[in-house]
Image 1 (cartoon, rainbow, N blue to C red):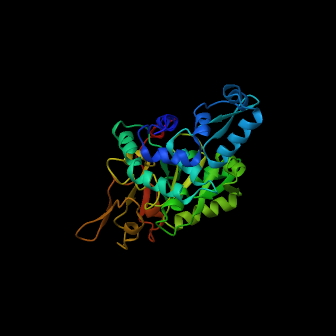
Image 2: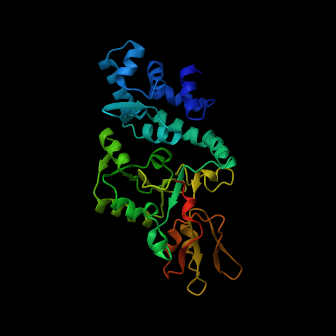
Length: 329
């Protein structure tokens, strides 16, 4: 294994990954990898360290940016280039590379099946903050005043300065369902990045809200970054493809995803035992007793609100059970 690819993998907490080594080889040559390993830096700083011209380094970085290997930031009046901050950013950005070969998609699928769970087991074991969190469907919460701005998808959209939509990289690579593909919503800096890179298209508030409603109608779960601010993305995830949701059902890897601050409750008086909630729940958290009565298994419920949203008699609602501090600052 090339030392520079190993070093880049180490920065993503996956030093011994053999699959990631192959992925690096596809997205950047060994010479380019050495440049990525120098980041963060400006074009002139890299040029001085490599004895290459400003134009040569600029061309290399622009190509790496296009492939999803490097990202731009600002430092005063200078553009500073940086490597991927974490494995999910690397995964998502490279999969949206328009010219990505099929081999790259298959390697990411192999990585997610064989090596990614090991990282998630560590995250879960040491109680590391979850990468993403569930955003509940606002209208299913009781009382609605309990919802914070950054845990209400509609408010997040209305408060965003820029909006864009990209393809869902999980469904793009795994291809396990027919759910909508172009419905990963990007906000603010996330939107600006994907518009500039050409991997997404700019949309307005009305279209973003339409995409959000379409996702709910298809039984998809809203996810965003696990921090108490307006995030850069709202993912609309399925339990068969999503790199977060499908691992949240496993006790050993569930630390990847934080539930919302809410849990579903069923009103026995209003429940007609239609079974819609059983079908729609991505976590299989709805149980049925011998009398045909349904109840929510709290330890499994992620508080997404899909069951309440699909209940024909409004017998289900989300109840707040976790404090505001549950979402990391």
